[in-house]
Length: 114
Image 1 (cartoon, rainbow, N blue to C red):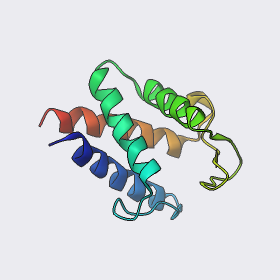
Image 2 (tube, rainbow, N blue to C red):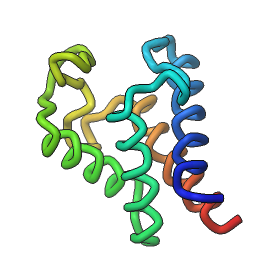
Image 3 (tube, helix red, strand yellow):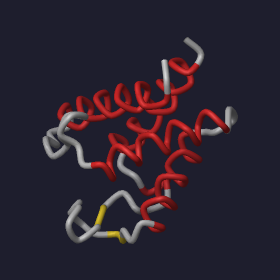
Image 4 (cartoon, one colour):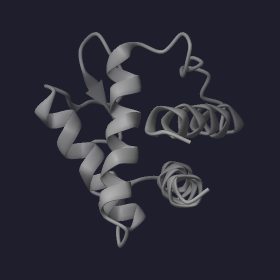
């Protein structure tokens, strides 16, 4: 399984988790914008290269990537304005957001070894 395959699976699982918590803003992998796909691929690559990563490390990597790409904290996720409410330290994330980091990490770890 290659990096893009793992990123696609992680994206789709993340979408389902979002929907379970009432957030229907995430599109399918096929409909996702390139920046979102690239972010998932980056997450997979970074975790693959850092086997001791924790969910906190994964989140911090995501935050750094977002900031590098011009995103800032905002109460509402808005791709056009590049604002996101999860651009906070891991400890400040709501539990449902922490779950996504844990699941992403677990999926990458399992799938890269299969």
